[in-house]
Length: 403
Length: 152
Image (cartoon, rainbow over all chains, first blue to last red; front, side, top):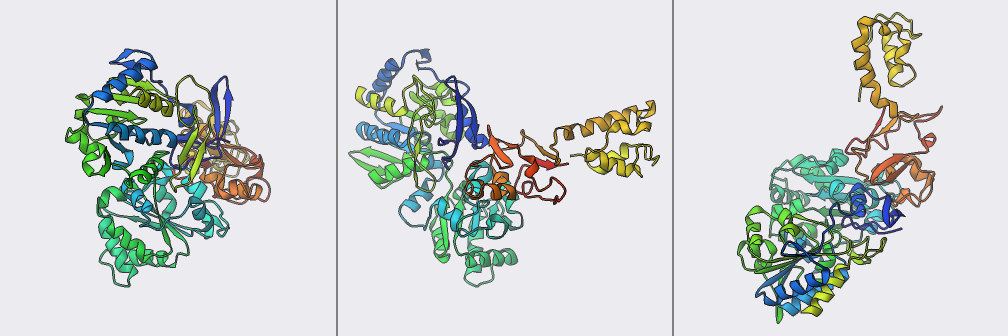
């Protein structure tokens, strides 16, 4: 039994068949997990200024670049183990650098609220054993976390939900399109217009407090009555909702306060995004967008998107992420002007333009460690294969020593 | 997936009874459930039905890989989510502490298993659609949003 690092669910019931130092077959992992276990098509090789080199030289060169940088930023972290993330935070402290992870354009703001205990939350096992009402809001769990419905939420039979999805559970989808999750929810799919989440929340709050909602009143009253009757419910907040209601999350808190039996759970995509958020929260009480300068300061200008747009950073160290392919076009032009150090197991778009590339082991397959699941549970990762590549934790340790 | 009406449209539709069935419609049903073979329809083997026979063969090609219960798994559509593994009532009865609670199957009595990110059916004799007392069960089709499981 090994742990899969394909998504935020960290399934720990995967079986693998290893033959000749390679994974021949994976069992029980979804397609996404199986692809992650198989590894990457093109392995990254060490290089300095696009010329082949060795890892030792690469680390020395990376240390030179970081030493000369006036405002460096360390970015990535969502695909690294907790141990590597801690090393990264130490390195940022030492360099007086800004540090940010992919949660700054993902679910960071919701995870912050959960860590500040502003939302009621629960574990995925609680949901499996007790939940009777499940709301997928702006989230297509079926595609982004493929085993979410089958392992924890809708289909399994839990301790007090012995009849599982057939009679004991109601799944509700609120989304702008009929996603695969919505297809499973069938009779309880609420289609909303683009950016219509705000109006939908207001209408739902009206329906919950006994007023006639202004918007699709019959369906809203039906939804409100299901939510009120819930013995143990869960709302899975997806990135669709986060992007739609932007920074103003107080309304969501008001809605959560009106529903005492319902828990809130942000859906996390990358396998250890929550791990980074928790580690940084413990050290600085912020989950992302932090700049160390003697003390830790937090501002939206320290987010990767804003920093690139304002051209306020002069060096970028990327660990296990590919900003060139995931960030908006308006933000990425600055990447061409600054030296980039890329630590990644695979060749990515970003690694192709990087000044220094340092290949690392594939975390969760070639090196172990620990990671934090989307509900906050710490899961141990297992080492399956042996490799000559150092882990990202080891690279960061050597980089810190070289500085 | 091909329907009975589509098959019927391509048959001679003379109700000649040479195949042993009462009507061409009954023969079309037999074709779809793989109880009858195209070669049993002798008029279809004649020269003027050559084109229709070819179309029939191509339409029936996907049903060749079907299990005895008529189940077809399309591996190219499957995402390996495991909804069918957990939803199948036979899997739950045979493995209550594995597949029943959403975890990986713990024994070999289950029908569905996920291998290499795609679902594989085995133990087909356990399926509720198999045997004398079969029932028209949809438990594995309904939870699949991508339509990777079909019965013919």
